[in-house]
Amino acid sequence: ELCEEKLDFCAQDLNPCQHDSKCILTPKGFKCDCTPGYVGEHCDIDFDDCQDNKCKNGAHCTDAVNGYTCICPEGYSGLFCEFSPPMVLPRTSPCDNFDCQNGAQCIVRINEPICQCLPGYQGEKCEKLVSVNFINKESYLQIPSAKVRPQTNITLQIATDEDSGILLYKGDKDHIAVELYRGRVRASYDTGSHPASAIYSVETINDGNFHIVELLALDQSLSLSVDGGNPKIITNLSKQSTLNFDSPLYVGGMPGKSNVASLRQGAL
Figure 1 (tube, rainbow, N blue to C red):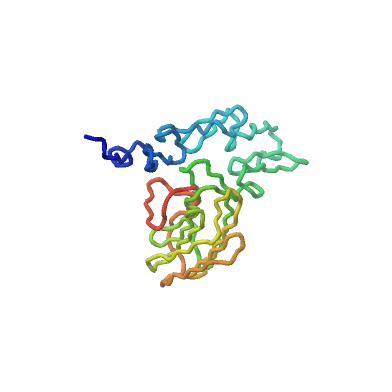
Figure 2: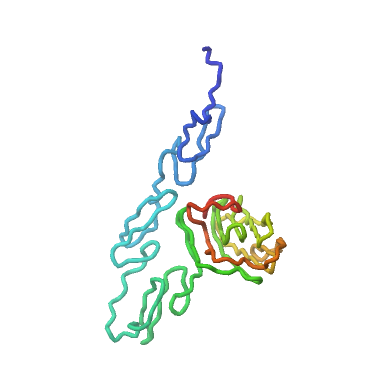
């Protein structure tokens, strides 16, 4: 009646912040801490990520939430449509029977066929995937069943400015999980003796520069090292010394419907 009651703008029935943004009370009312990809006072505007896009060769940029996709003109390829259409070669070209893989283009140098690999691939025929680039939070890499044996070395070279996200995951209840948590690397390892054991790196790696994360699984132990520093080690005692299942290995994220208790949140 006398306007003596202060409204809680962040209450569930009053919260003006949209798209799962965080509402923060202030002396003058409230402010919205927007989720990535949204802007505006109420986080109601989908930011146009195409404003600073890297699409080339006349490609059309399609905006997404916290990312974008380049729609290439006919014949062009690549993440940003940076690769020109392949040359039309004569039937007698050395490339006729040279099978370049993963979208690579075959060119002839000194009468010899050579595969010109797309970014992230190496090898004589571009058969080896060595790096990936994640444009938006829905992106991830799924590698068919790869058994984590008693002695396994996994090395990742990572550049990111995110505070949290999945770096690598395999399994379910029995699992190996590596994620970014508050800028640090968190590793969780479980070969059948619940609950899982976890370790954190001292170093933070979310500065946009490349960092090397090395994991060494030796029987029931897992060591974590960042940029060649002193390793952190955890031991998970169980009867089995390897992750014996046919689940895929995920890198950079997971399918949207996955509900894995051992992971905290998000994707790179």
